[in-house]
Length: 256
Image 1 (cartoon, helix red, strand yellow):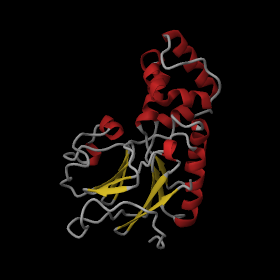
Image 2 (tube, helix red, strand yellow; image 1 turned 135 degrees about the vertical axis):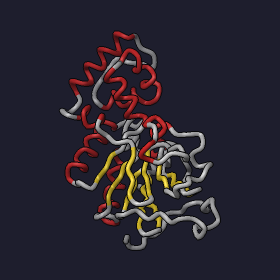
Image 3 (cartoon, rainbow, N blue to C red; image 1 turned 90 degrees about the vertical axis):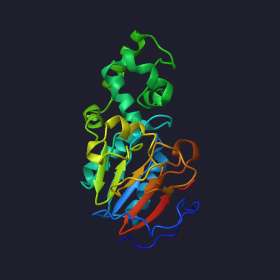
């Protein structure tokens, strides 16, 4: 069990009480980190706090490590190092990692979409590329080839191997959301990365709690057995981690 933390200021919980609901009880202590989006300073700060507050917990990163911020390449390197050093660390695939992987496979078809959603910042973090938000197919193929040359060895494979979800006990972690009518193991990866219209609105019959990022909230929220932790680090400077153990949820945030 985590030692009691000084709670960060959070809004009132949107349901009235947990007494009528199942409590979040993973089989192991969890520390779940929200969307990083290239914010290396935020990541390093939250890692330092986790090393003190949750050193033995399983650390789970919800995806969207890249895009929008200025240090996506460095964030990916840091996460790979952490995973190598801590076997009980899991990095999930978010929709932004998926857009990057699609660009690596089919740059002419997927490149401009990625550039419009933050890919330009990720490309810049790997070096200078002559791209805008709209590019010719030839320019995108050329930039893809340059990116592959500059990416650390094995990084593309590592990204492609990221799982879409993780579950421990009655707590599941996904990037964006889940279909409330389907077990986590039967979810469409696109739903896990991009969300579902019934998510957060409809209670799951299996009473599983879902921790997710993707949708920005001012402060972490709990509603309908859903814990939302994307506090918009790239815009606010606040990266949030949820510490979950034995029916309790506590929050850490990076310093502004």
